[in-house]
Amino acid sequence: MIFAGITKSSLLDYPGKISIVLYTPGCNYNCFYCHNRAIIEDIDTIVPYEEIMDLLEKRVGLIDAVVITGGEPTLHYDLIDFMKKIKSMGYLTKLDSNGSSPEIIQKCLQEDAVDYYAIDYKAPSYRYQEIGRSEADSEVVLKTINMLVESNKPFEVRTTVIPQLSIEDLVQMAQELPILPRYVLNPYRQPTTYLEEDFNLVTATPYSEKDISEFAHALKYYQPNIVLPF
Image (cartoon, rainbow, N blue to C red; front, side):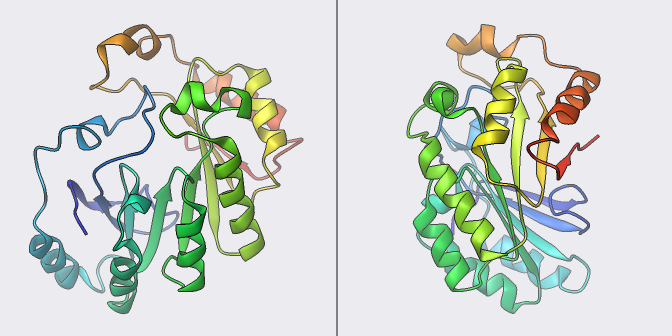
């Protein structure tokens, strides 16, 4: 595995657990609001594999879980072997994904490589290509999510409530999704690095926490297990 970044301790990335977060480079989407753009384009820094393994060995028993995020981790051919290796060390594993590779998620399920999944659902289906760009396809993502529902594995779906999504969009998304065990609405925060042509999108006025709370109340009819991270 190749990693372009590491967070050595996090209380936020695995629900109820202390985790180490590893960031894989590269992504097949191009969301304007991506906070990890530096690792999906020109990658200046690669964390040595030996450094990561040394940290993981030293933290056994002190850290509960390892989160693999990106970028898009499912683009890496050795993802499953690496996650199984982490599990063999005694860690819980969590995978963050845009849901674009249901075949990889299926293999993760078959080999019990992942303890917890987080899948992004970015927009209503008719706007998915507009928001995610590149290879973004809502049908593929919904296939991944439905697969996880059927698996009974712990997982959540996350939506960043960007200013460009209306309440009507959010309602449609909630209707398109199956009933989820956990649906997280994350507030939008302006990224520090973005494409010049996306300036107007990035600098649009974000919804307030009060706005998002009101949206969540409206969406509970369709998604009763909605969660706000604030």
